[in-house]
Image 1 (tube, rainbow, N blue to C red):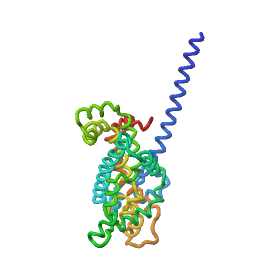
Image 2 (image 1 turned 45 degrees about the horizontal axis):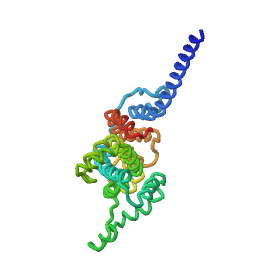
Image 3 (image 1 turned 180 degrees about the vertical axis):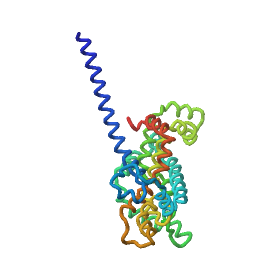
Image 4 (image 1 turned 90 degrees about the horizontal axis):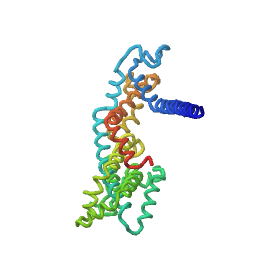
Length: 315
């Protein structure tokens, strides 16, 4: 009788835990998906549906006019190409430089390595706004330690170009680079040293060992870093709007969308606008900005989950 009661209790406990788990997952899914579903429902509404008391999610009049207006104002296709180019280049360069830095911290012994790695951790903790002004002034009057003025007679202004992103990516100082270096360091430390020692016995140097032995085994960490880097660069508005003021990328277009929208709609008059309609078109623009990321995630989600598990981030 006691065994039957115990089995019944275990069944009730499993059943209760299943309910709790379902509620938690459903709640988190709702929090994540609700803004996206709301923007989709808003984007396909007609202007008249904004004032209909019976329209909440499904519009009475289905239209794609909001998409046409947002695409026109944002110069969407040109902006999409520029953003893909910027995010793709910075992702590749950041992954390469952070992999080198992570391998050096994980495997190479040199003086000051612990102090330098503490500086890497500090870049994760320190808010980027605290160092924005020095970086901005450096890029505005870029001298490369005095070499450029020595050759040309004056400094170079790198602002409003892709060079700030390229230089910071090459030197492992780009957006969230400290986190990427940490990921690579932890992954390389988990690889058995026997593999490296075997390569050294065969006559391979440090560079050859890194390229032919360590880097191929670091594919999960590389996928994780590349996905994080691409998404964060795509969504970044802080550095992008600071370094790029006139380039057509998603961050600058979204930041100027309200102003451009108020100028274009209703004959260019910036007053007496319908704020609800303007908000509807802005939501459509935001949806267009995140749509490529959603499509990419649908194709790479399996690789992303596997790379997260194998890189040890969840541990």
